[in-house]
Amino acid sequence: MAFASPAGASIPIHVDTRPEPKDLSHHLSRATKSREASAVKVFYKYFAIPGIAQLAGGLPSNDYFLFDTIGAKIAFPNRWQPTPNRPVDPPSLDDSSLSAARLNGTSSRQSDAVTVPHSSAQTNPLRKVDIATALQYGTAQGYPPLYRFLREFTQTTLHPNCPYKGGPEIILTCGNTDGFSKTLLAFSNEWSVEKDWIRDRESILCEKFAFMTAIQTAKPRGLNVVPVEVDEEGMRHDGPGGLRDILENWDYSRGKLPHLMYTVTVGQNPTSGVLSLQRRRDIYALCSKYDVLIVEDDPYWYLQFPSATARNTTTVSDPLNVSFNPNIEMFANAEPRPDGWKSSGFKYLDSLVPSYINIDTDGRVIRLDTFSKIVAPGCRLGWLSAQPAFVERILRITETSTAQPSGLVQSMVAEVLLGQDEADAKSPPAQDKGALRQGWEFTGWVRWLEGLRGNYERRMNVMCQILESGNQLVKTGRRNSISSIVSVDLNADEWEVVEKTQMYSFEWPVGGMFIWVRLHFETHSLYPLFRRSSTEGLDRFSRALWVWLTKKPYLVLVAPGTMFSPTPEVAAKEGWQYFRLCFAAVDEEQIAPISQRFADAIAAFWKIKDPKVIEDLLQENAESEKMPAKAAWVPLIGIC
Image 1 (cartoon, rainbow, N blue to C red):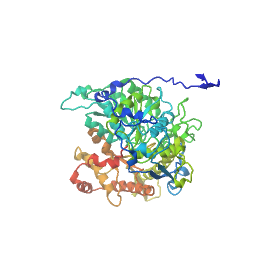
Image 2: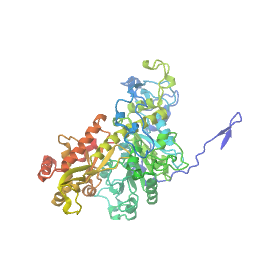
Image 3: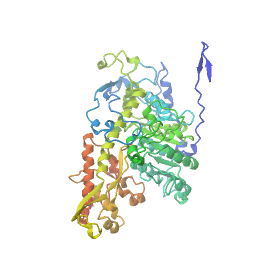
Image 4: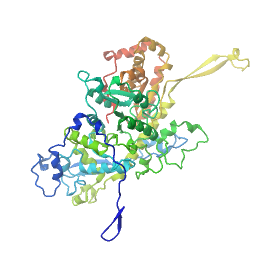
């Protein structure tokens, strides 16, 4: 479609022919349906009218703000070196781009200077970044310049294949925990055993092992938490305990059929799984059939590791398999990229397994993004993406709760991304020598994300190599000649025997920050004793190992699997078998020695023959016979 310009030239007009998202307003909670726009904040749009005399709002004078300017030294976007965007087969531990040596001393530590002025001469509120506006009362949608940047980035670059008209709308949040809390307020009704019928109780689906802060947010609202079986990818759509099994055979004595799902699809916390696009399609089809909303918490989406895909792929041992189809575009998990899909404009982003939003034909996905893992957790800044009708309701919740994230943080991030405005060129920072500081824009921001992925992928490789080399207990010994068993005279008096005992196993994480280690307690000589001792015997055995790891000379703190068990049944049946290790949390130079200490500690524990040693370890924890309360583990879990 085109129209004629005054000069007669034909100018094309882009017409969005995608269908509108479905009306899913029946999912809204009673309170959310009744919310109205803030009576005060409806005035904000008038504040931008040039020359208007503002006597309506109770805004303090920006001349009296404490801060004259806000400044910081920041990294350049190319500080860290990227890693390859696709799996390399066969995997090579000698690949220089994945070398541990690249972690230290090879990247530039040069810094750039960023200053947010007190007042900008820019008149466009979508480009204006200054203290006068950022620290003033503002719109709940977010600081306009940052909101504009993230909205465009979300629609055109993160989710270019969103199938509904207009693409997702966004609203800024105080991180993903805040975004999820508001999502629960918007789409669930509180339920109380004292006053409500069981038939009215609502349920939320989640992975069998889940991010517990989210579960702890849901439980006080009376929601029934329903774990779904997982495998190495993440949530399963089929099989016993899979999503189809749960929804097709729902027990209505537990309450309503679940209409909410909480899921971490990349670097699943704690299992580190990355959900393939095909699995997403299978799960989405079930959610559409049974009318389930998908809350996609994705703080680790940018951290997908092709090198782990190569290590986990069974075909690498096949001499005929010399590459991962080099002529086919693929994601980091080696899954082919669909033909005809729009590109983000960046090879790195195109290599990442896409969000549910890219297949969200109904408009039933609420996605949570955060700056916690890509800028800093203390920023408490993120954004929520969903169909516009959903975001409008969450906007109403935000107006009467957090209002908006910190103006200090929003203005600094906006200044980094957008740069110094030309309207302020007459008074540049002295260190810039009169030159405008250019903003990162999309290109710089994506380069920063790509470099972060590179460094975390190198960390992952270092830890996984050491853990893999130490996962078996090797015993050697001498036996008498076996000539009595075989008739051949081998002219030897003794034979050396090598015995290997599998102590633990894990999948190399294809995404995220964690390694999910399964301890093979059944191979420990004391396992039968603790299995018979009591119903909690194996949990106690696992707890003893956890204490053992914290003792000298090992001094390693890991997160026990019971922390991530959404129900007591999951904790008792399987949670005790797992530990979660985070390769992102320690100094780079300590990754290798700490990983080795973990492996050494497991080997030493497996050599314990005296049950009294185990009991003594447990006695040290006698003050709290169970693990510390989950609230005390927040630093280990990692808020989003």
